[in-house]
Length: 231
Image (cartoon, rainbow, N blue to C red; front, side, top):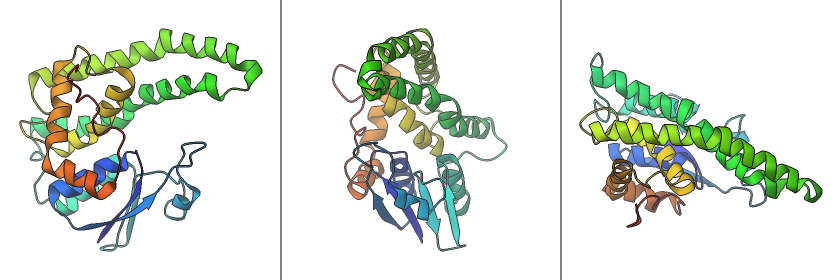
């Protein structure tokens, strides 16, 4: 039996969605962020030394595994039975592997920088806030925002060629890509002037398995990202 160690408003939501798509039985152990720091609680370190989400444990094989991409590959390989992944050796499978690892390796770093530098002026000591504000604005304008835009435009071009990132149908790569797109829609206007990104988000949010994952996992801040009529 798989247990998902689920942190609120985190990447672990997409692991719940994956399991719902595959209709695999699983348990959830819930964790809440520290309201002061928004970090995961220290109790997660009893499951994995880094104390990050997602983490899964699987009693079938005595496995404890972190990292979204590794978790998705493990679940697909062990329980997928050919579902949610293209056939190995095909061009679609190469794209599948690319997007599965691109999501965290390339897409998320500039989005995390955007979040960190957005918080920097508020978190700096009061006498230093004017300087922190200038530093944050400079970093956002000269580096972070252009990088975020570069990735968002890349998604739009890719989704203009196919409704899904890796193949003609939904794969686990789309599940992995959901978090960067939802985060960018909420924080960086990813759907503004990008109709294919907006359509992708509507498609995934309308899926019954996605909705079941929300019911199991609880409140998720990005569930409606990009779904407004203005998108």
